[in-house]
Length: 389
Picture 1: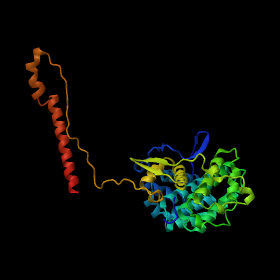
Picture 2: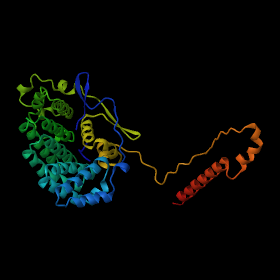
Picture 3: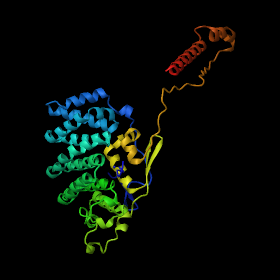
Picture 4: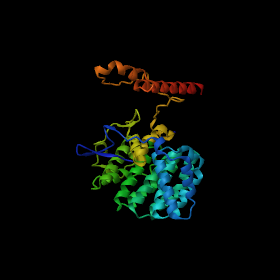
């Protein structure tokens, strides 16, 4: 996918210092798509309800769509109904209630992850960017600003294939960091979103004019008493250092004299993150991929494992090849069935009872033997049917 190396943050305490990710295996509760996904009929019904006049009906439909997309990989439905989903979500974002617009933003981000790169992903970016960037200037609620930033980042991550498109989104986030610094939770989200997009860039392609002063800006944030801002600043500085283009992010020489950027940024960071995906393990050991992994894990929550198993976008991002199931039906046949029954028969009645217990058609031994024979006959029939297919 060219420069695309595709994820938010996960922070832990290590020895009194902050670390991005974790140096131990990270387990995620499995959420299989077969049990978590809603059927296509239900999704079609929810899509139809997005056209309803009643706002509560649209809210409920969006909530169900978001849940389904979070927990499972809905590619076929998304591809078939892409235009309807995109424009109905944009309509809900512009005209709906606070709750409806909140759900619409979330649905757009999940649609981007599901539909992946290509023409649909690019269209989603082109249509969503003006609306989301405008919302950053007008919205005042921290939780909604955080959601807008997260989903603008993931939509650009997937569909902003051109350098100019990625940097345009980064500039919106950069402006937000400076102009809305009083909203700490939202400012930290802007930092992590900006870092996600920076993690997809090559050092030679970065513009000198856009990001000068970034290093002093993030260094100043290391004095913040807000934990997420502190972690985000460390992460951004480490990423800038790893890209190997520090001169594009430096400010005036006087501002850099007493700064050891390498010491500030690398201190406390881990070398590898490991996530269990079924019987496999996804391991990432570069900072850009750790940033991408943590971002996607946070956005998808418990559905991350299901997406990693089926979502080709994530396979490409992390160079992950899931185990393939063997084609055809699998039939598990017990090699042997046994029945053990202990009976106590008094000696005085042993001879009289033997015939009734062991030979009679109503005896428990005969009934058990008949059940086993019937079961094995059914199994052989299923084997023949499978081989015939």
